[in-house]
Every structure is written in C-alpha cells, then in structure tokens.
Length: 309
Image 1 (cartoon, helix red, strand yellow):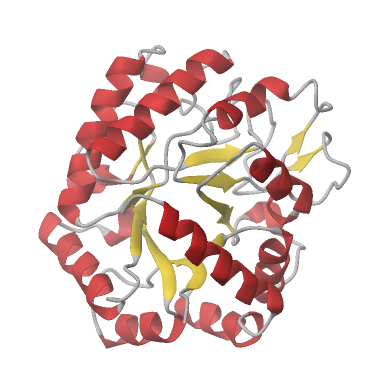
Image 2 (cartoon, helix red, strand yellow):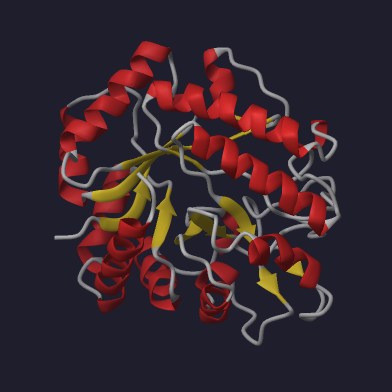
C-alpha cells in the first residue's frame, strides 16, 4: 500500500503515543516541521527518529522551510543565515550557503528543504515575499535557484522550487487572501522561465494559491488542471505538491476533504496540510476513498522511485 499523498504537521514537538498513532493511521508521504517544533538539536533529532521509526517502510520525507533570511526555521536553534535579497545574484555564494544549511538539516534528520523561492520580483510590501526573491531577471533567478538546489543535493537534501506559477508582482499575501496574477501568457513568460529551465533538475515544485489571468480557469492555481498539465509539459520530473491547503487564499474553497480531492484530482502528486491532527483524520475518512486520492498516491510512488534518496 502506497503512502498517503500528504505532508502533515504534528500538533506538538515531542514524540509520543498521540503522534505515533496519528502517523500510523495516516501513513503520510512526509512530515513538515516548523520553528515551533524545534526546541533543541537533540530534541529535533529525537522527533525525526520517531517519524522514521513509525514509518520505516516508506521511508518518510521530513521537511522544513529553510530559505535563509526571513524564512529561516533554524533560527529557533540559534542558526542565522542570510536571505535571497542579501545574495546580490551571487550564485556561487548561494550554493555555498545552501550546502551549509543542507548539512545542518541533514545532521538534524531532515531529508527535504522547501526552498528555494523561484519567484521573480517585484516582491511588494505586504505580500510575504519581501527579501525572499533573487531579483527580477529570470536568468539571475534561474542561476541562483540552480545553485541552491545543487548545494542542497551535495549535502544530501532535496530542494523544492516555489511558488509556481510565480507570485512576483502580486499585491496580497496568499497566507491571508487569494492573490491575482495579472496579465496573459506573454506577460507572465519571464515568471515561468526559472521553472522551465530547471524542470528536469528540481526534486519537487510547489504550486501556489493564486488566481492567474493567464489561464482560462480563474480558480486557485493549486486546484487548476491547467497548471499541473503545464508543469508536466515543461518536463518536470519531480513531485508536484501544493502549498499549505490551510492558507487564507483558499477560504471559501470547501472543507479540507474537498480541497484535497480537488487538488489531487487536478493533478497534484501531494498536498501540504498544516491542520490539527484530528482534522486531518476526519478529512481522510472521506478523501482517502476517492479515486483522485488513490491515483495521486500511485503517481507519487512512481515519481519518488525516480528521485535520488
């Protein structure tokens, strides 16, 4: 039986019967931790070891959002790293930083880093992108993202390009509400370019929650068939996963069960669900019986076989 096509988040930061029972029941593809789960290096290692022990046959992916700068979960352990806007387009420096962060992540027990950000600027105030983009030139952004992925790979950690189809130029934060990406395909071409150039290299691509005028379907991109078909037509070899389905951008899009069935049915290989454990279990009671869930689980298993450990 294939793992569930999900990245789930523990309610607490310590191993215990509640977490172990939850993981055994859900059997997720991966677990995503946040700064609130990081209390000390030894505690994080113990938590990651618990996940691996409970889900030994997968093996499970254990992920963190570690970009550097303002999105640097490792700062909870006292580690400080510069962000994308501090790199001045210096790909060599980006690779060295990614390798250093990757070694830190691997030492703690992580297998995946949900980074780098491949969005082109501008990163406007109030969007949550401030300081997180490498610039507005697609060539510079591509070079820096390739370097970041390479640095992580050298450290034995998988990276993830985000947030397709590019949130640069949006006016609101998708954590709060649904951004509108204005312009047709020609207007957004540069925003697609880093993903197109890195399609065969990225272990995974995270799809944003946004309404984009370049598609015929105005629904959120994470729930849009056109988006996943487009990524596969670019030659993406890795996992296509959604941003967190609990984000404010999806308000009004139904329950977690509905959101899961919709995004997986649209073509996502996996979904991030930063919900309380009990809510995830309730949603799975319905969603896990759907054809979309079963097909995504099989698709994820096949894609995972092609990726480096």
